[in-house]
Amino acid sequence: METEKLFKEYRNWKKDMGLLEFELSRFEGVPCEDVIESMCLGQPQGERVQGGGISDKTGNAAVKYRQVKERLDDDWFEYLLGRYQAVKEELEFFEYAVGQLSGRLPEVVRDMVMEDMTWRALSEKYSVSEAMIGKYRKRALAEMRELYLMRERTAGQYLLD
Image: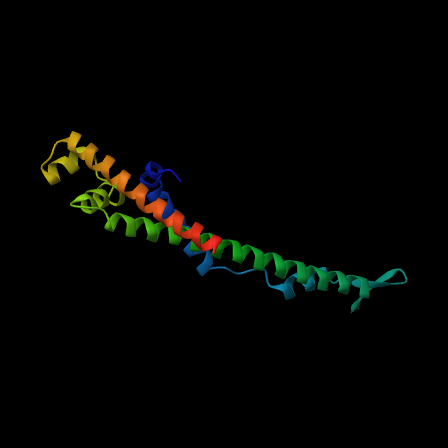
């Protein structure tokens, strides 16, 4: 991902992570017994439908449905969990990278990206011009680009070993 996009995506990652946490905390599939019971129809006995027995065909379909439903629930949960872990890892690395910046850049970037302060507010807070805030941003992006490249090289080295 382009380093400049990281600054813009931070808030989206936070929202996405909150939504995923909510979905994972409340994850609940349709109770299988309810699905199977609703699928189990009575056997026809002559001209009347007898409600007491379950046909083998319907029962087998219900059991098969249960297996499919469980697999789909598992797949959905694994997707949510995998997505959550990926977003969390990106957020944590981004926050780590911000902390590794030189000088006063960590404070400026935190205020700029995480606190969503305007350049005018930043220039007032740090007693510098807006042009200087632009230079801080540019320098922070360059340093973060290096950190992300180091991360990629490390991952690439692992894959080659």
